[in-house]
Length: 321
Image (tube, rainbow, N blue to C red):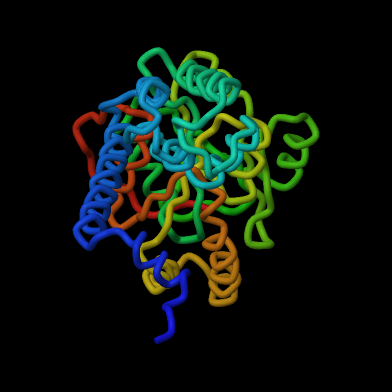
């Protein structure tokens, strides 16, 4: 009778009993739930990120210590995938690292970053500058108007544009409507924080002076601009929080664009082609808000600033780039 190969005998003898595998599986599920609970507590601000970091150092095998650094950072308000990657590169921390496994210098850099981030808010803990961008007809202007009318603590930046006003728009309130010569002068005199030519037609830009004054006074500021402008603001002000306003679906975006009836058919096709490119850029943003209803979308945006609302008014009609 031939002997059974040693390797087979060894593998059978070392295989854990069925009951052990069940117990291990249950333990793994419990650990995942515990880490999820930590992430939820961070996101809801029930626990500060610094407290979680301290717990991870003391108990590296606990739920805090076994939490991946990427999950930890993305649990913080206004930090998405793109900003997480930038932060980890700056702190020289590998994305596979867990909080309890960070080296001494990595922990120090992470602690400094968290302390600095909290120090960059206004005295009552609000984010100072939020940029709202998204595809054409998604309702950026409508959401921004709702915020202006219901959240008076937020300064809504007024953009300059070379396009003509729509029937419901007011100069100096919705936009500063200027001609090409004036826009050229503003660029030459460095009066614009950002500017771009949108949909291959008109130019839009954000006057710099009101933004800098409001931030200097400690106010929260909302910029409602296009994708190109959002990228320029990020380059000029890295601490700005970029929020992407998305439609519930592509069909709904098309319906909104056609339904507002403010563009020719040729212009509609051009804007929809641009919208496809803009929708593909969502990962560049720190947060994403779906504009299903104006009031809810506005609330999600201002939640990033922790601003209180006053008694709601009637929402305004659509605007935006």
